[in-house]
Image (tube, rainbow, N blue to C red; front, side):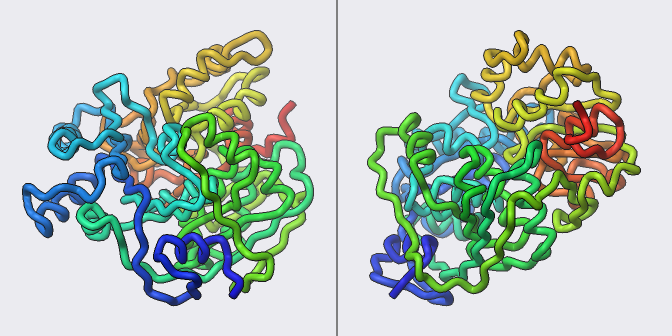
Length: 432
């Protein structure tokens, strides 16, 4: 029986020759990811159910990456990290990236692939809804709650329902200054914030194959914004090259059958896609950027797992190298690797850091989630009033960046940079 890539990965993890959507199956877990927000709760569940002295099922398959509330004076935030440190020491967990040490990496969804822990055909669960990012490398990756994560810590397996698959085929060539963010915002706008509820969102086509791995991460990251269980892209040589540069682990990719049945397939001509925004207060409020030029802005924000990768900053630099920003513009690299690249990479004879400084951007923050999740009051870039913000982040819910009175428009790094220059929402094709 023909199966999709998601079904095949889950079948293999369950030790079955085939599965169908709706099947409830036990799957073996390859990686469990958690961070400073959900990690302490996960540890609490594990110790309550398995005992204070219980050992995790495999310390080498647990990755703990503090990233959300890191650079803050908040006492409770620091207490969470202390809890993680103690647990890591007790359990002998190697994949811990301490913000107080040189091992610190940054935002978990970008850091996990950077350190070589994402491989095609594997099963990854994480206590964060944007764990689906890792489907960009051909893995089944999805977010779970603390209870499920605590159970995985003790057993290395989880009971899940096989999702239906929705396929999104984008063929052709993307127009200039259209990015992955524009693709996924268009899709979410078309199907709605619940249009993929508990479904695998499979992305394919010429335009997807042409994207960099980091751009593919942007698309899979936001599958959850349409209610998706996971986002996934079949691995290719571009994915293998990315992974081989980071790990010597053997690769065992999985591919779906060409004749596999999917619940529905959407087809897009890449040439019809345009720079866009998602208006407050849900990511499905799609609008072309040129239709919203009357929206005045108070600030711009480039960062997060969705918009703080080096690819995102390179895109922003294309605009800002020749311009000055007219509103406060906040920059937050997703990881230490990205922050270092901002210093080392040059464009027009200047480092990216210098380009942003010359453009009048705010001082670049240390790598973290920062204001993407609001955070404590001293969080870098956090809104505190009724600011109108254009942001590369993945959510624009009420209060998402701090103040409940702020309004957030989501956009690509190109659109955010162009809008930072003019002070109102601007199509990047209209900036030289």
